[in-house]
Image 1 (cartoon, rainbow, N blue to C red):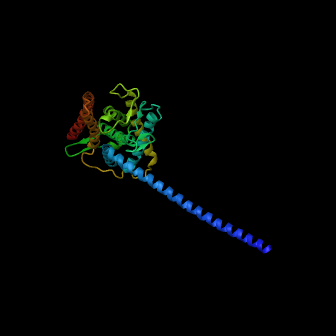
Image 2: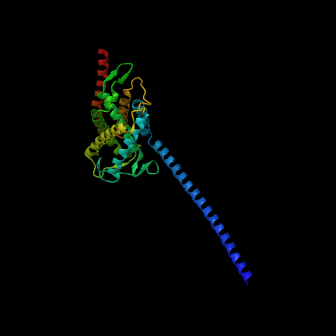
Image 3: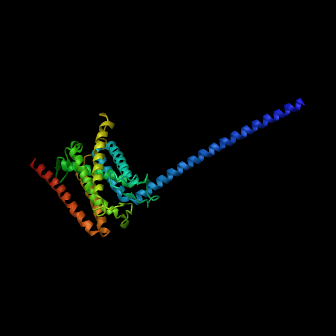
Length: 317
């Protein structure tokens, strides 16, 4: 009886060991499978993100062409380190303001409007805001600020070169910030009315104002919002620049001098205006297009006069 009892106890212990090993192996295999599943899921999400980002570029090529021009101008004017900082600041502030106005439906600071998520799955959206929309504020705000620097700065102009002599000093001034914000609002007077009619060209219908607006469907609050947002972007960048970069940091890395450097921001600014005016006439909005041309002409004349003044001053020197 004792022998049989020891035998039963041994068998029970042996079975327990075998069960424990089996259970451990099963747990290990289950853990490995879970890790593999999680890795496949993360890889799939990353692949989907890359695909949607590529799709965004192909769906909005004009945005990324303007963005590429901005990167070239910004890097050669203020250096690549400050360009990265400006891009982050501009995108973040623009995104928060657009999310606040449209997604959170506070109406601040652009007034109340809503996005139409018709292109979700075709282009990148972040928290209910189209990625390309906030990204556009990076080059729109920078080129407006840089054009203000050209208009306010000491221009050295001639047939062989056009340069802003005191660009670094003027760029940090409050007057450049105020004028840059005004020039960005000036852009929006041309951009938003035709963007609102995006269903009639390749932009697509991406947003609407529930109560409409008095200027070709756009609210005056929207224009004020553009002014405020651009001004905040510029001043926050200038404030952060002094704190992020130490005196030992080479913030001019990437800056290049080349002929007609001052004409780069002028060309990009007028190029953006021209693109939107062309789209306006292309969709048959003749009145809107004519009003846009009338609005743009004084600025174009002013830029030409500033350049001519620079040439005359250089000739006198």
